[in-house]
Image (cartoon, rainbow, N blue to C red; front, top):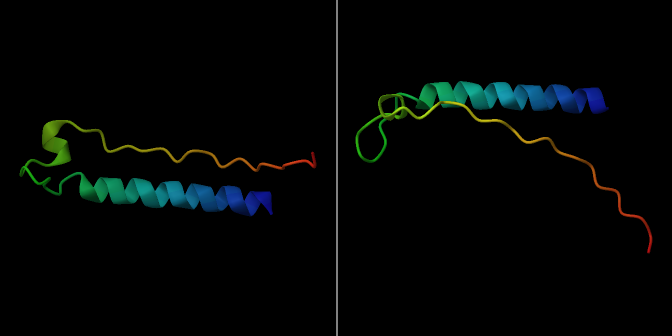
Length: 56
């Protein structure tokens, strides 16, 4: 089951990368695009860690 989760996370990162690549040429409210103002089109998904709480 963990392997499927990792693959799902990889798919999510790929989808995020595709979205950022598409948005890099979309104008911001000021009119300049992220590419024009030098904003890198990168983002990283943070890992999700399972937390198991023990009985107190």
